[in-house]
Image 1: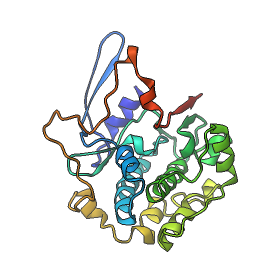
Image 2: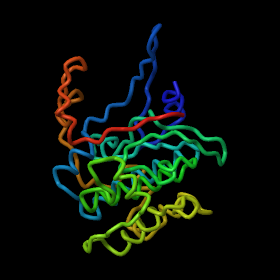
Image 3: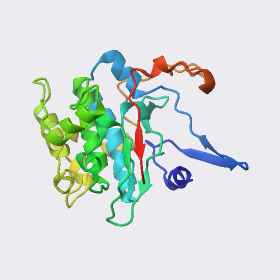
Image 4: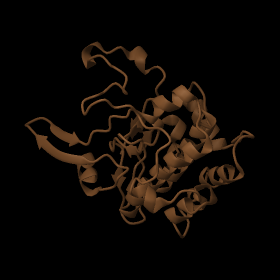
Length: 266
């Protein structure tokens, strides 16, 4: 019901649209917009990393979506390439609002949820968190797109958490000065000092020099040619997605290269 309520409030080109809902005695059903281009995760895995213009294009879509959501005090909390789908012209749609929450004005929440590699330090330490966690996650996404892996990696989630709390990021030489500067300002352990949480809010992020080549009004109108356009042969073509068996006989080995979510508490 929370997911349905939040999706009902949103109308943005880079958020998956809720078309209608239905219910019976046991379930609620959500009819969602189709985004048949597949996951950003799959394309990134195939190419390993993106050149900066392509990474910036996708980071612009996500940044614009977060700016819109944060204007309504909605924190997303589940950013990762697996939750970013391509539409038919190669623009991104943020999907899966299962962990999204609308905060009271200036409020915080304490739910431990998200994907280990993308958790902000304040979520791990359970000190309460707010909209700032999305800007940390955007920094992780940009790093992963431009480098090929997140900045804090390990096989054991506890090791990932320790690396996040230590926050020692190594920036490869191929990253531009502007990319490094933006990442350094997003991946700040103290959420009060993190870009996006300062006086100008999202404008500080989208106005950073890294985003200077992006014309956001054109982007929102989808007038910029996307760097990758998926091949979609028909309105029912699902070939851009992996095939999974039905739930009762699921082949879990297919999930081995995908990150799983955590959820604990409220």
